Image (cartoon, rainbow, N blue to C red; front, top):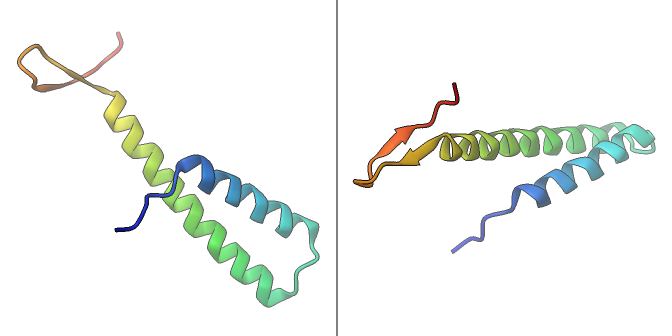
Length: 72
């Protein structure tokens, strides 16, 4: 059973990679690998944020049915 990676951990790793890329000390192959990893992390983070948004925009009615939560 694999453990889910926390959003915060992925964001930290993404920030680390961005810093490495901005420093410019990587050879081209390493930079491409880091960029590819960063794009995967960004996609994963976006998916987690979308899922979280979906969860918090729903409320439970008294009969335990989900209902969209709209702020007016």
